[in-house]
Length: 291
Image (tube, rainbow, N blue to C red):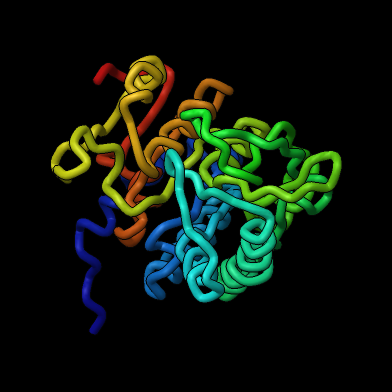
């Protein structure tokens, strides 16, 4: 005899319905990173979540880095691993390795995982179809960080053409007009893609609950903040959270309705943020509150 489904399951579906209606046909850019790219269970759950977004009529675009794998390969090859202002210092050898790992391995692993769950995905990098035109940048502090690129232009035609039938999965590397390759921070790449596409929302998956007032206190989560308040607070933020918050700010300033930092260590945190009233993580919007 079949057991009736718990009432909460039905309530969850009903709670999600208005959000599904609101997001139908909209583009959501997802920066995929952190533990969700490492833990086998989380990798599988992420792929299922992205496929679900496509099935309910949204247009998910995945942008990824691969920091842990890059670091692992650099250590195997005895290459120095250094970060400044949360950005990886990248000489020519580092950029060559980054392209090999992100484009040749990580990107294809993500594509295969999504394919397994019933929606075809296509892997891209900033070099494909001149997707990203980049230029060399410095760290926010002004320090030289080598061949780290800032995206000056996104060829949205490549993405929209692919997204009509497939889920685009984009590795965060690119080149300039002279053919010099750059390592591009995946947070910055996701923000640039979201802004160029006029995405409805952009989601940044990370390894913390969101933006914390005190990085050592997990209970100090800032659930929502406005772009103006974030801009004022940004100079005081350090480490890997700074490029994420800066990317959120850039996306919102460019017209994306909201940017979110969500905890990729929690299964289905992406769906929880999009489809439930409670949400999770930190939301940044033009009309958000003060700190």
